[in-house]
Image (cartoon, rainbow, N blue to C red; front, top):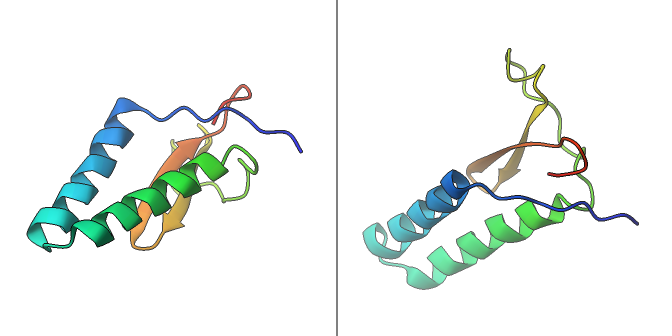
Length: 86
C-alpha cells in the first residue's frame, strides 16, 4: 500500500495548539487535551494512506479546488490532496 506524505500547515498546528489549550486550561483537563490532540494528529497523519477517503465539501469554489472535510470527534479537519501530497 502506498503512503503519501502529509504536510500540516502552520495554521493547522496553531489550531491544534488552541484546541489543546482550551481543553487543558478552560476545561481544566490536560489529560483529555492531550488525548484529543493525539486523536486529531493520528487521523491527519492517517490521511497519507487513504487521502481520498473523505468527500469533497459541498460549497464552491472550495469544492472545485479539491477541499475535503474529515470529522474527528467534534472537530472538522479540512484538507486538499494534490500532486501526491496531502
